[in-house]
Length: 285
Image (cartoon, rainbow, N blue to C red; front, top):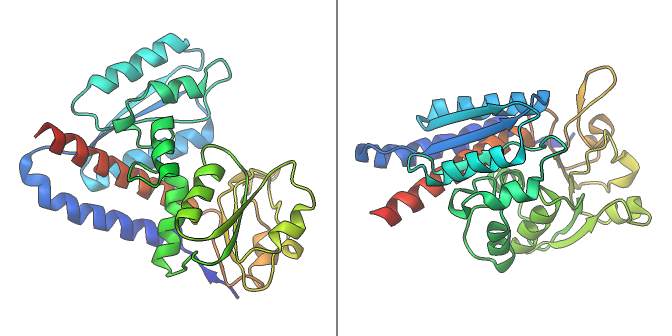
């Protein structure tokens, strides 16, 4: 049976490290500040925002939450982001995605001050990632890397396959794996014979948003399988993008859903918020 990559345990370890670092600078009287903006009432987004708020409380960070109605005009949302850009007690701004259909997510992301882009999705942040420069990294892919590091699973020299090419997960995930010296292939809806490509992989990262898309016959014996997907079945059960029960006996290590990558996303958001706080307060000092 595969080693279970426990996101809850690793997330706790990451946050404990952040708490230890924060303890050293608490005497300054300043604290990291995170603003989360939620437009509409997407149930999954509401749950995530609640977890982010709880993580801030646990670490002693300052947090603000803005809940806007679904029909909020784009100009109003952009105005709020610009106001938060100017707010000295806010070091990180996160606009929860997905947004309602009438709002342009790219326009909203580009309005965020890159120094406060704790979701790591501003073109400036992504450019730094591609250039191999230090910066704020996309939370979910960075969370995957932190989990692999915790379990001493090195991507170096491995054949890695990332399934999905979204700007939120797939593209930054591929870039982080390249940075970690993996040989990376990105699969997507136009990939021919996707199963044959996935079977080549020592490390599979599934982020395609389709329940149990990756089946046991697609995964080679001993592969490490990381499931980023969270899907709800018709029966209301939460499942990932991989068929966990069928693949776990073949894999050397695998993430569960829930309790795998999800908690890591929260932990890396806290890490990014703390990093942004240090950079902004030190630069002002």
